Image (cartoon, rainbow, N blue to C red; front, side):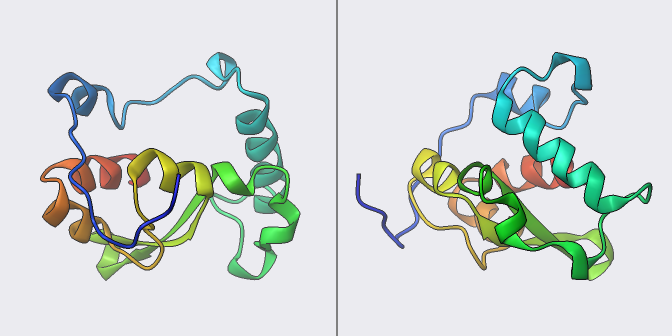
Length: 121
């Protein structure tokens, strides 16, 4: 599958939007990449809510980088910018989101960017 920089319409089922943003118990995590990513994240944050910007290095996440997304909080939390976007996320959505904001996603697929923002919040 070729990547495209052209936006595509992403159809989101209404029931998926209801589920999006709900907490998932850590004990329910089953995928090895997710649990490894969480382990690395927790090590880097060292007891704080988030790791410092200086400690986040993509090479540290090399085993999970293709399946992760890092976003930067903007405008006092009113928007987020996709900074690191793994290939799996791009393949699943059909185009590169790197550098895009959640509000940009809403322009392409109304409600989807808002749902993602709820996850980030």
